[in-house]
Image 1 (cartoon, one colour):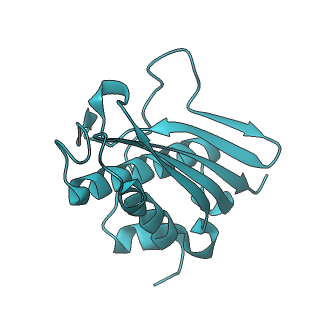
Image 2: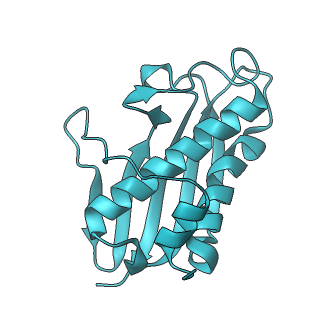
Length: 155
């Protein structure tokens, strides 16, 4: 089997969804120079928030990691919509993870591993990135996690 991004997605059993349309007055991505900026993606599955609530209260660590993974899948869907071909990704520069957290929850970094691991597994070396994992009081639509991204791309 070829070592392409599509073959890795297939091996992981991931079918990228249609990229979600913006819900307000913003665009889903911006290309500036050789950088692709992707707006925050929620843990949507079949068009609905799949994991909602606060980590450490309503949401387990494992479910939070799944939410972050779904966000990463949606990041890739937006990147494909922007670029037409994920092979144009040179490198994921940075992922920012926002984790809806109970006040005493301190494992945001472990939640964000769901997104980081998926991106690295799908994109290989190009998926190794800097990141932030930040606790938030609440996120849009009561989502448990939101992730945005900056990627270097081939023009």
